[in-house]
Length: 192
Image (cartoon, rainbow, N blue to C red; front, side, top):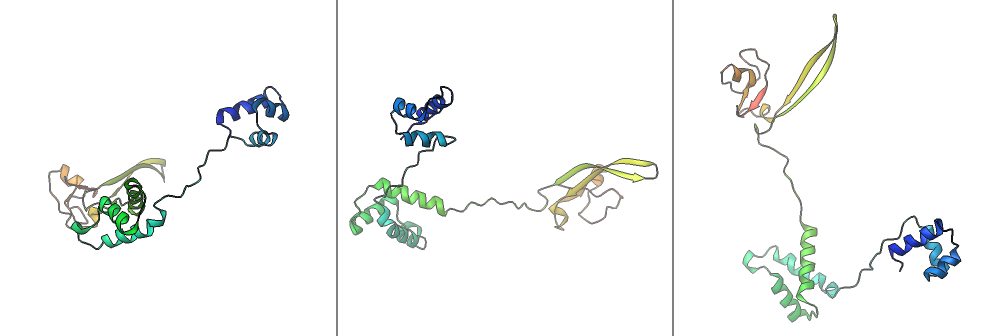
């Protein structure tokens, strides 16, 4: 196996010093075929380990069956990793170590774990507002009109604790209804 530093030196000697493949093979003590392979690749190949068979491999179905059975068992009767290791060793003749069983069980749990992030908020707990500019064409010419788009789940829920922003500024408490009594633009703000 050729290390990354050595393959870089081979490329550098070929490009800068203009050494031939034969000279590179003699100087770096590799075959000409290996030198051609190194020069043909744009960057060195990453080292890949071949997966080695584990002592646990023949016992994985047994471990899975035991752990699947534990899902329905009461909490106090479930297998700990130590109990699982002792049971494999005593009943099934497992020759390996506790650490291998522990690593397999932890990896199995990570693969089966579901990640869930709740993206739903209770009514009245979230307010979204977008601001922007709208250019309106009217008789006098083009005019910039500020735009605001309010979106809140509170509008969908009739019992949400919201108030109209205009009524709040005027000192009035308003229940969430579709139209404001004072004629303010209805901007619903939770918890005012």
